[in-house]
Image 1 (cartoon, rainbow over the protein chains, first blue to last red):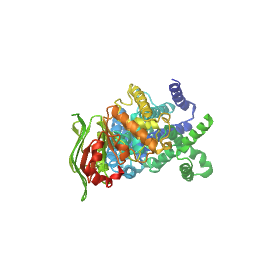
Image 2 (image 1 turned 90 degrees about the horizontal axis):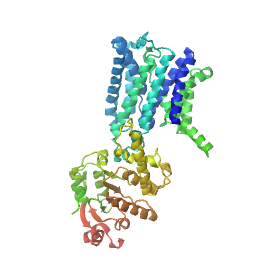
Image 3 (image 1 turned 90 degrees about the vertical axis):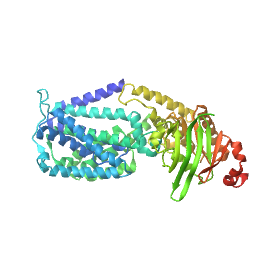
Amino acid sequence: MIRVAAWVGGFVALAALPFFLGSYHNDVYRKLLLWITLALGYNFLFGICGQVAFSHFAFYGVGAYSVVILTFQAGLPLPVAILLGVVICVALALAVAIPSTRLEGFYLALVTLALAQLFIVVLNEGGNVTGGAGGIANYRLPLIFGWRLAGPPYTLVVVALLGATLAILWRLDHSWFGRACRAVRDNPEAAAAMGVDVVRTKVIVFTLTSTLAGIAGMVYAFVDNTVNPPIFGIDNAFLILFMVIVGGAGRHAGAAIGAILLFLLPFWLAPVVGHHHQLVFGVLMLAVILVQPKGLIGIWDRCRDRFSK
Amino acid sequence: MQGSILEVRRLTKRFGGLTAVAGLDFNLRDGEILGLIGPNGAGKTTTFNIIAGTYAADEGEIRFAGDSILGLPPHQIARRGLMRTFQHNRPFSGMPVLENVMVGAHTQFRRNPFSRKASGEEQKQRRRAEELIEFVGLAGLRDADVGTLSFGQGRLLEIARALAGEPRAILFDEPAAGLTAAELDRLAGIIRGIAERGIAVLLIEHDMRFLLPLAERVVVLNFGARIAQGTPQEVRADRAVMDAYLGDAAAL
C-alpha cells in the first residue's frame, strides 16, 4: 500500500510541476519526460530482452509524422489518425522483426540501422506528403471537446504517457513474460529448453517497444508543433543506447537516470565546452563500461548495500 | 507391461558419411529410470539432441505420450512435458537462483500478465520453485547470484529448473560429469526422488559406477545401434557389451 501511495504521489508531483514552471522550463521538462519514456522502452528491448536495435528513435518519428500527416494532410479526425498511426507502427515493426530476428547475431542491429537511415531519406524525399527537408509546421492540436490543450495542461498528456508506458513495462517485467525475456537475453538455447518460444518473444518485444516509441512520437508531435527530418536523425538512436548503458541496462530506474543525466548534461556543459558535449558523453560511456558495467544504478546499489550493512 | 512415455523407433541420423545413430529402438517406461550408455562416439549425445529437438533425424520416429514429437522445435517439446538438463550448465546468469527456477516454470503460466489473477499465479509458482530449490538441496541459496554457485550447485539448479516445468519425463545429459564423490551420492538420491514422484528419467551417462546402481534398465549403444538392453546385472554380464564397450572387463 505504501509503495502504491508513493508511486501515486510521485506522479501527482510530476503532473503538478509544469504549473509552476515558466514556458521555457516547461518545454525542457516535457522533452525530458519524453526521453525518459523512450529510454524505458529501449531498456526493455535492449537491457531486458538483449536485442540491439537502432530503430527506436525512428519509430518515434514514424509515430509523429503519421499522426501529423493523417490529421492535417489527409484530414482525418485525431482519434482515427492516432489509431492508424499505431497500426502503421505495429505493421512496420513486424515487417522488420519477423525476418531479422529469425537470423542470428547482428542482423537486427543492421536492419534497424538501415531502417533508421531510410526513414530520413523518405522524409526528405517525401514531397508534399512529408514536407521534404522543411517538414511540416504551423499545425495545432485539434480542439478536444471544444477545449484547446496546450501549455502546462498538455504536459499532463506527456506525464500520462510516461506513467502508462512505465506501468505496462513494469507489469510485463514482473511477470513470466519479463522472465522469459531475460532468459532469452541470457541464454536462448536454455530458454527454449524451458519452453520459451525465443523468436516469438523477440518479435513481441520489438513490436511492443517500437509501438510505444511511436505513441511517444505522436505525443511529441504536439509539443513543438513541427516535425522535420533533423529532429529524427540517427544520432538520437545512439543517444538512447548511451542513456540505457550509462544508467544501467536492464533496470527501469537505470534507464530513467541515464535519460535524465544525458538529457540535462548538455545544458550544464554548454557554458563550459560549447557544442563539444558529445566528447564528454563518449568519455562518460567508456568510464561506465570500464568501471561499472551495471551503470550508475549499479553504483547506487553498491552504496546502498554498504550503508545497510 | 507398463505403458511407455517415450518411444524411439528406427531412429537414424547421418552426418555426411558417418552414421551417428543407426536404426535405434528403445522405450522409456512411465516412472522408470532408464540408462543409455555406450563408449565415446556411440551416438548417445546425438540421440539426446534429436529427442530434445536440437537436431533433426534422417529416419525413424519418436513418440512422447503417444504423439510424434520428431521435428518439433525444443520449446514445443518442453511444453509437452519433456524437459532436459544441459551437460555444461547453462544458467541464466542475470538472475538469482529462484528466478532461474521460475523460468523453468514458464510453461505453467496461463494468465495474461495484466490480469488480476496474475499475481496469485506468480505467488503459487514462487512457492513451488522454493520447494524445488529445497528438494535439490539449494535451500539458503534462493537469492544467490548464479555466478557464485559451484559447478555441482549449478548442476542441481539445472535439475530444479527442469522440474519446475512439471515434466512427465526428464532427460539428463551426463549429469555425473564433473561432480565430486559426495555430490554424486546426493545426485543419485535426487534422481531416485524424481522417479518416486512418477517422472520417467532418461539418463545418458558415461560413469558406470554412478549409473548401474541407479538405473532400473539399461540400453547399451555402440556405433549408433543398440547392442544390449536389460537390467544392470544382465547388461554387466552381456558378452557383446564386454567386447564392444568395456574393452577390458576389469573396468567393472
